Length: 154
Ligand code: DQA
Image 1 (cartoon, rainbow, N blue to C red):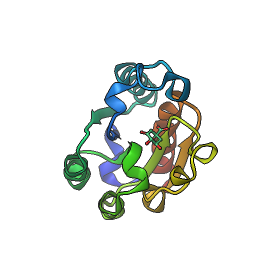
Image 2 (image 1 turned 90 degrees about the horizontal axis):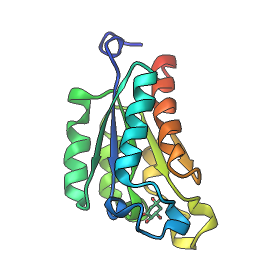
Image 3 (image 1 turned 180 degrees about the vertical axis):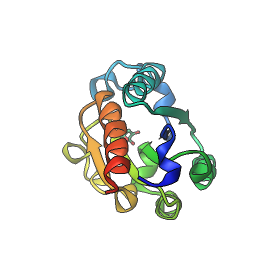
């Protein structure tokens, strides 16, 4: 662990478009947890690990990119569910690839069991690891994975 990482670890947790509608949006696919519930879960998981989670959502690609560009100033890792942008955004992939932090990609649903256009994710190319199909719990696992990467320097 580097000097910078010896203090409390802060994980930036980013959520892309339409995830603000969780709870009411296709609950048979995405579950009944709201984004606020997931934020609480992330805070709890981070606290257990002696870390903190800065949880954000945006429907705007550029805003997500601005947050990623600024991430290294305050955070040590990024967890991201880029939602629909996962399958379309080279710009988000480029931002993540140059942010200098370990990135863990998360999806609530198992994108590989769904329509073919969801099988490919640009985000995966910039991610250290990917968790999908485990619902809200996937966020907790992603934070654990991010902290694990930092502790082990992997
Ligand atoms: C999602 C999967 C994406 O294909 C979809 O566009 C989403 C949510 C998920 O968490 O399962 O908005 O990222």
